[in-house]
Length: 502
Picture 1 (cartoon, helix red, strand yellow):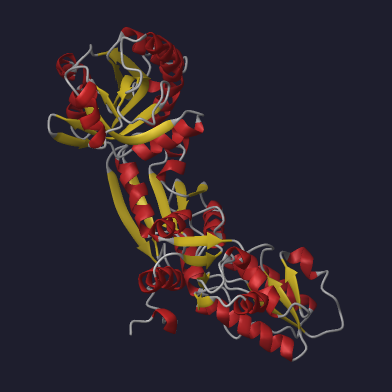
Picture 2 (tube, rainbow, N blue to C red; picture 1 turned 90 degrees about the horizontal axis):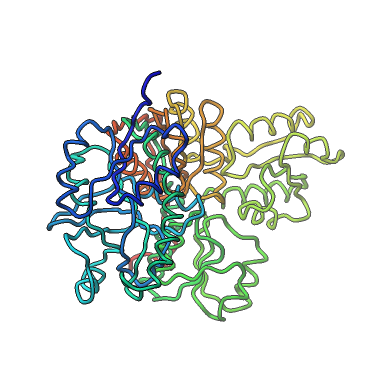
C-alpha cells in the first residue's frame, strides 16, 4: 500500500491541539500531515528541518485575543504575522476566512502577533492598540520558515482581555476552542488541496464602464461640493463595495424619496428613474442631480419616440430591475415587458410593434428574443443602435474568450448586478463559472485542480477587487498573470452641471 500524498504540513504547539486537528481531518488525512512543534518560538524555529519538504505550511491551535470584540471559540485568520519587528504577509487569508465563515464559525481576519512569552496587562493593550487581533507563540518562526511557500495561520481564541489565562472560565473556553479547532481542520485540508501554481487569465475590458465611473464621480463631487449627507435613490450602481465606500463618506442610500428630507441634495442612480419619480422629487423640492447613464437615457428617448407614433413597445428585460422599471414608467400605456421567447407569443395583435432592450442583458439572450419578435411581427422596428451597452457587449466577448481557455472562471460582481450575472452565465457555457463579491466568496474546492483561472469583473465592480482575487491566489502558490483584450474603451461621459468644476 502506498503512503498518502502530503500537500501540506499543519503545525501545532500542543498535543491537545494536534489531537483536535487530526480528529477533524478526513479519514485519509486530506493530504495533510500534522506535527507538533512544541510551545514557543524557540521550539517552533527548531522545527524548520521537519518542514523543509512541505509544499505548504499552516499553523493552527489556540490563541489569546487582543481585540475586545473576540470571545472564546472565535476564529482569527492571520492576514499578516508580526514577529521580531518583521511583518510576514498571509495573502490567502480572505479565502480561508470566507471558507471558515461558510462552515458556520465566527471569524475575523487581521494581524496576528507572535511573542516569546505569555502576554498580559499593559503589553496586551499595546499590541491591541497597534491593531493586532490575537497573539500566539509559534506562527512567526513557521511563517519565516515558509520562505515564499503558501502559508496560513489560524488561531482559535481561548482567553480574552476580560478572561485571561489561569482563570476558571478559561477552562470552559478551552473546551469550546477544542471543538472549534476540530471544525477548522477540514477547511485547512481544503486550503492545502487548493495550493499550487495558478495561471490567472484576465479578461479585458473588465470592471468599471464609463457610465459607472460617471455615476460614482457624481456622488463624490456632490459630497465635496454640498457636504454630507447626500441622498441617493437606490444603489448608485449595483455593487456592495461601492455603496459601502460612499456610505463611509457620507452618502445615504434610500429606497424611496419619502425617506429624503424636503429640499435635500438627491442623486438618481445610474439605472434611471421614471417620470413619476421626477415629479415626486419636484413636489418635495429636492435638489436633484441625475446620474442616469446616458445609454439608459437613450433607451428612454427611443421608448417615447416609438410610443408617440402609436407603437406597442416590447421591452426586452428582467422584471424588477431598476432600469426596466424606469423605462416602463416612461410609457406605461404603450409597453409590454418581454422576459423570454415564450412572452413573445403573448403579445397582442392589431398594433404596430417595436422593441427595445435593457442595456445589461446577455447579447445572445436578447438577440434570440428580438429574433422571435421579428418572426411574429416582420415589420417590427428595433432601436437605431443596439440598446445593450458597449461595455456589456465587450465584457461578454472578453469573458467568452477567456472561459474557453480556463479550468474555472470567477466573475467579480454583486449578486444584484444584472451585467455581472450575465457574465457568469456567458462564461458558464464554456467552463465552471461563479459570481463572487470578492476573494472571501471563493470556495476552496473550486480551486482544487483548477490551474488556469479566468477572471473578469462586472461593469459596476471596482478594479481593486480583481487585484484582491489575484493577490489571494498568490497566497496559494506562484501566479502567472496574463490578459486577453478584445477591445479598447475610450468613451467618456460629461458630468451634469450641478457637479462640474466651476
